[in-house]
Length: 161
Image (cartoon, rainbow, N blue to C red; front, side, top):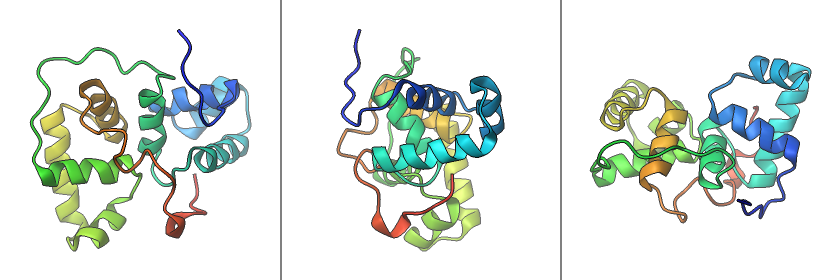
């Protein structure tokens, strides 16, 4: 089966996307692909620009699952029912925002956002942001027009990998 490649992701970039979606750290990716850690960082910055995303690795993981560079697997059980606030929080995760940025956007403290994210991850059965993106893709909890699938926010360009 051939996956569409609208951003023309190279085979090497696809390898990086897959490893990021598997939760690998830059050092682990460097070892797996026989690259210098600085090369991994450069690849990830370039890949974010090419795909139009910035921020947290979860944004890249979502694209890897969404575009089927890595199969998110079959959904387990019934899709969780999420309220509007939970869906908005998931979209900020998919968009790659940090805890601080989410707190600023919502007018909450970082601690309040941490608690909300922990509750949401528990509800999803997710271990972390990347696992949450996998589960979202399995159950189609975020549609294609959701944040995280479009162009990068120009105010957030230039962020480090």
